[in-house]
Image (cartoon, one colour):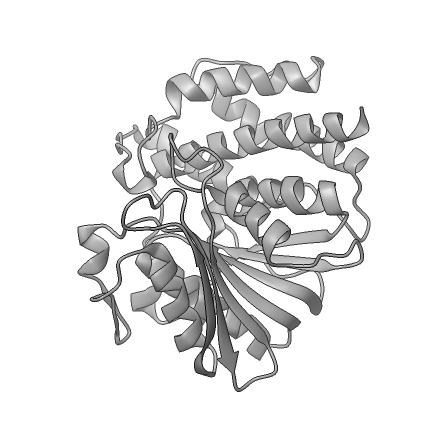
Length: 329
């Protein structure tokens, strides 16, 4: 199997300068160039990084954006010919969207579990617990999400004995996931702001769970930075956690837990919101399906989903480079 194209590294050997070099390597890689060519575009590796990113973003907005502002679960799923589908899946593997990952270190100050659909919230919190069971040491585990209303399909879900009935929002699934995955005695405290029933994009909450293990457990629902337009996105949830909940030090190590397909874009978002402004080290891992009950693992991804998240990575990398430029100005 060909080596994966490395994602940017920040902390413990990675700096803002090396992040830009890593982004340059990723967007100039053979898998990206092959994908661009298949969909009618080109990547001139001799051009400046911003030019390459702008060109790829323009191409991806025309050919790889199947959401058009909708939720991921509502994206259209076009069918590609077999040769194109194989090329996309092969590129996804080489670009780090479809491989098992493992933390760089055995010890972290924070493990941050990113939210998602009901099933995904349970899978990621369970995976975080499995990491700690298998030797990763962390002082705190925090699940990040928002007051996104659960869909009808999610509220009809039942995974490994955890039913979603009675849950209204993504944050409810994250609290349930932490309680199920870790030894939770009780909910110690809940701080809230806003009214999620009236204006979920502006509402927030911080739930502290009391664990029998010596781990600080929290579930955080963040408000959107653009509440008139959309719900809180990954960057919003991380930024709210950093600014309102965590006390990050430049010496801290943060491990972000997500699903494999989202590792590249959410890793870049984490570097932009944690690494660049605070200097903390950032690693991101995707859950391993073989460590979890089959019923809790999200289904495998179609080629269109890989293309969508390659576009998400390009957007995240563009914002990351812009943030680095602004910090150095």
